[in-house]
Image (cartoon, one colour):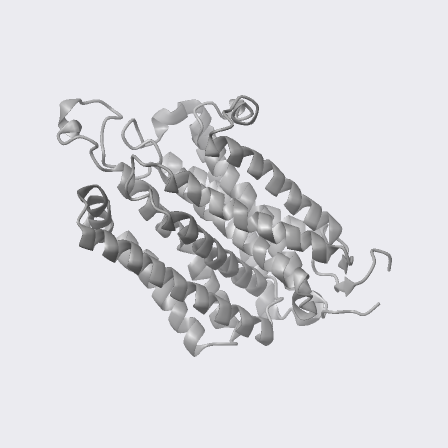
Length: 391
């Protein structure tokens, strides 16, 4: 049996340990802040949130979509590594599975708390319609979660059994279907022109791959398993995905604006020039695409540049999904509807409340703690071996 990777302990420097300790402090602080937000959520209910009848989805749904996509992308990366037997990156792939699980847990917590009655979530699975994509997705979530747990269990001691290649091959296709189906949830909504498009599931796939790679890059940087060769590989792949994302966004926006269909032009103009224009131009395009692209282009193979670029891509995923969810909902289906009725929830303007921000921060802390604790429970720092499960 041959050792395939260098133990993490040999790669850790004082600098890496400092980053890891900072991650612990940040995760614990975020979870503590989120605990207060969770208290407010169950005491105040949905009255503590700023969404309403016209804009029923807000920060939590955008965070859920971004985190689920990042989870699918990170897991797809791990599956490709195991399927293609890229032995040098096996430890990074094991970490990617753990990161996928942490992001999945954080994302599902966001959508769970968005439900009117969170304790009745089981009804979506057992009392749903077979023609409902959301009903099917609820079962996809269960299967996907089990796949992640099994993957972590199989590789828990650093021994990669031979059948892991076939398991990863099947898992990779499921991750693709999973991410694409997530996009189909929006792509089939004919009442929202911004969402309804055959390109929507494709955009979800591209963004899932990009966000997942960004998560792996920053995770590898924090845990000290990102070396020059893996940093170079991630840089090249992330640049490809950034280029694809720019191409598809350009195609989607320019064709819609040229066609001048009001139902689609209005939400796009809201994104580009509306009250929160800076979310698109500064956070999504600037910090989420252009700056990471420059870091990857001029610092290819540099561990710090790759880690920071990955962190920016992963963090700015929220901006991308906010621009997907909110502008489509913030449009009047009928002209004058905003003034026809008045009431606490009958407004088209939305900005997250303090409770929503606190809960969102708490879910990130939860995901971070899962990864930090799982790093030791699943012995991610152990050397990785190939062969049977017996040493």
